[in-house]
Length: 408
Ligand code: PLP
Image (tube, rainbow, N blue to C red; front, side, top):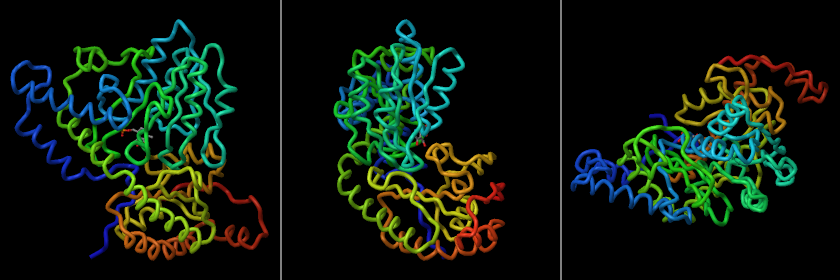
């Protein structure tokens, strides 16, 4: 039987059995509506508030500053939209970065079409935003800075604390998307100087369809997206997703208990992957920052080969990974993140992301290291870029490589 290895934890994680157990209680037995006054409702309310306390404790926040959402995407939308429309009398300028998740980037771009002025900051070759660039972009009309904590595609951890300090000095609200960092590295809202922060359940061994937005007390933010009931203290209308909220609370608790040991384990596996992949295979480069990166994140660009072809070959060997290229979604454009980092189109097409999780072992890494070199070799031999490869490898040709279409 083929070995099965899951290296796609940045896409989603398996739900922890203890989380499933907690959730089942609220699907099966304690099904009351938390708004109801009777005992069924009161039980659900108690569980929702306990989960809120767990999430708040993990962030160093007050439970009243946590609003449950349907996930990271909604938290990002809610944060950005809410700040934008609450501060219209102060200004209309929003600063973000070119490597944000689409939940942020497309929200900000949509506001650009509604009359807001948008600055999308460039990043360096590691995918890092510079604090100086943020400072230079601020105008007297700036009302919001939204820069992610850690990048989902290349794992780079941004200088959030410094950007937050700057925002605070200037009296500008600062939001960070911490969907990828929460549960993996310390995320404390005071230490990071953030006013709003998004998290998601399914990236931390919790369920899909649940997340939370931290909103610092007193921030100029109000709910602008949903019209409905008074749930979440008028900040998010709609009956609370009690099983999801309970699941997020439990997953948060577990992540906090094991974060340090888990990060050490993941870093060891990650570093072996990076060392051996770049050592054993030619024309491979690490993408993202070599040091300031998530403990579970290894991502690469393999030249002269396409990400999708590698993914399919890995899948046939039982290994689940992902690619930064958007070919699978029907577009030939490679990842906006890799392009923003200055990686040429044709190289960005050969990207692979390996994101480790708490159940991965050294044997999983060894299996990948055994399987990957022959896959790359075979695909390179079949590649239409083969001849150019010959030229490029022998140093006879610089830059004549053509961009090619996706065959996956
Ligand atoms: N932000 C980042 C950085 C992400 O990686 C993701 C999901 O991949 C999201 C936001 C969206 O979160 P959700 O899937 O919970 O909507």
